[in-house]
Image 1 (cartoon, rainbow, N blue to C red):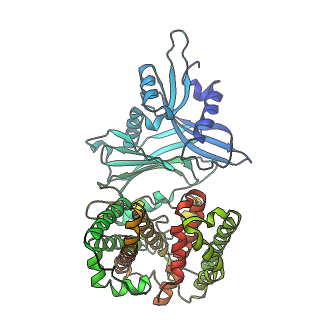
Image 2: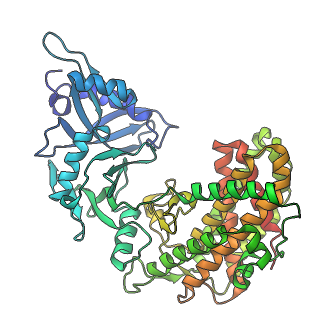
Image 3: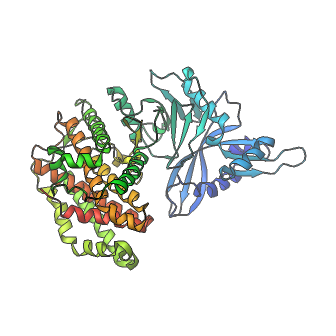
Length: 535
């Protein structure tokens, strides 16, 4: 290495590009592990003018086998001497390339800059002055919304969040969290659009948008691409998934200790019907406090859906009829996904064995019945409205504050294209995601008990799941009752919700077969349960 700067713009650049190819492939945020990386090329290299660290914000084009090219954000910092040795001992997996010094030169390392506190502090400084960085004609611009003032932060200490996903999150003190999108998708992200809209209309149960970073390549796209978003951090006690599991753990222990009578039986009615009638008093008493939490969470989700249709003159957010063409497309996609899942089961007999064996065989035998239920949505005269939605809503996308809930992560399902994430859909998509999440929570908490306890607790787990689901729906219906997003006919409501629950179960079956075969029983049982739903 002649100089650290030369690794970015000189003859040594090819060495760093080659090292990045191997390092990127090992990251969880690299999305295409089924394909080999052929090569990595620097696309843009941006420097923060006032930076004291030896860092660059690099956009790299990753060329995959078959010719596909995707762009990733990889900020890099060069460390040497004691800093390099300390980093090597602390975070060896974040080292991209090691440099061996000769003569008087010290050993050094190129590392992921998003794990270097000094660089992260410089990034926050760049936000504060709304810096624009340049690489040729391309720009990287920091945008800040007027109410936010980074200089007013009493604690600016950065901390990279340990949980690595398809992005990297950095917490500054306890007030601001920045999320850096590693893979660049052209155009503004759904997370930015949704966050800005909800902040503008004053929705109080999502983190306030503070700013964002946008990349502009004037020769390629008129719209800037979102690189990062920054939100005001919400004090919380963890996510709603952890809260639900802890509630179930405490409740199960109480049931085992106190209850000898059978679990109260809920009437065999549709969840929406029960939500409009309210839970029977004995079920409310039996489940306890969690029904109130679920009702409040449903209300917050409903308030979000009401907020998202509160500006009818905004074409990106105005509600539109859930028309027949859209419904036909949804049915076709669901049927294709179901056919693929059944085909995979047929070619992998082991999937039809174990605890899910009998249930898997039953869904194969009832394929025609399931497809008929999917198609029933196409015959509706009124299917309500399609709007912007969260798009990937489940208990893990909700923070529990101790007394209330905050919805987070509006970027949509990672498997969908950026355009698909921004499309308008029925708000019942979000509700189906939450109801399925309650099913997973009950099954997960039950699996933590021993076999004898599971047998005794099974009817109680079913009671909790249905009571939580009914309560969530009750709260949601109350919040959206002043809008016209739902069909006027109650039977049409039930058909729509059932479709999106079928769709979600089918997605989960495919996911579990690929990733967690031991969990396959949960969505398979959920699918069969939908077939016997009451009126």
